[in-house]
Image (cartoon, rainbow over all chains, first blue to last red; front, side):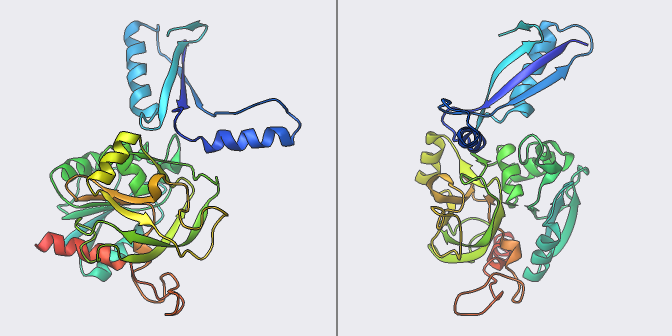
Amino acid sequence: MPRVVVHVMPKPEILDPQGKAVAGALPRLGFEGIASVRQGKRFELEVEGAVTDEVLATIREAAATLLSNPVIEDVVQVEVEGEAAH
Amino acid sequence: MRIGVVTFPGTLDDRDALRAVRIAGAEAVPLWHADDDLQEVDAVVLPGGFSYGDYLRAGAISRFAPVMEKVVDAAKGGIPVLGICNGFQILCETHLLPGSMIKNAHRSFICRDQPLRVENNRTAWTTAYEKDQVIRIPLKNQDGQFVADAKTLDELEGEGRVVFRYAEGATHGPAGFEENPNGSWNGIAGITNEYGNVVGLMPHPEHAVESGFGPDEPGRGTRTGTDGLGFFTSVLTALTA
């Protein structure tokens, strides 16, 4: 089944407490030289049939409606597995 | 007067909210997330908890529950709606209230008796209080940090829609969070819509309605606090006005 991947990230101006916690843990484990971390979400959506423009439009709408909250998050990428679909 | 309390899968505080409604003198009506029927209630409370496990985002999935469509329509029609904690998060996800909650800035769960300043006593849920009165009710959350863009914050502040702001005097808390327990922008604990019928806040008035079970009141004794009862008597006043 073809797969569409949606990436959601906290908006740049919103503090990301989880990313901050990860950034704090890295040097304690000896991973040096990492200035900051932001943590987002990756959704893998398996599609019945071909990934047409219509299917992608539906997924973009779902991404903006349910998968992300536009107040605090951005949908940064919607890609068909294997190729970037802007 | 009939006041409905919605139960979602994962709701924790529906029983206390129903009890608070009864103590205030109204008929408490349990509502179920999967029913698209408000049973002709006069007001609705969305209680706290972890509806749908807080999966995806707190309140994100509850927003699409059948009962919420009715709540949104009723709220737009003017009936009083109160969202407490997870209920506040749901109101933000439905866009009945602006902004959103993210994880507490100190990244820990926090539970304490929290002083709040009542900055707007003209909403359906706050007329029992004096303006600038400080009340003390429990607070308990992990995702309690209120955020909004600058334009929204300016609107909320300019239109007097910040209903509650965190105040000093909590008994304990992480360093740097003695007053504001979670890093909420502008110390905002609760807000209202432009009509004053929809109110959301993170702390829990329904846990402070009966002496013996409420917060400790400094100088007055342990568990004597009943500062939360005014929410439920206010809405009765609003409904009978």
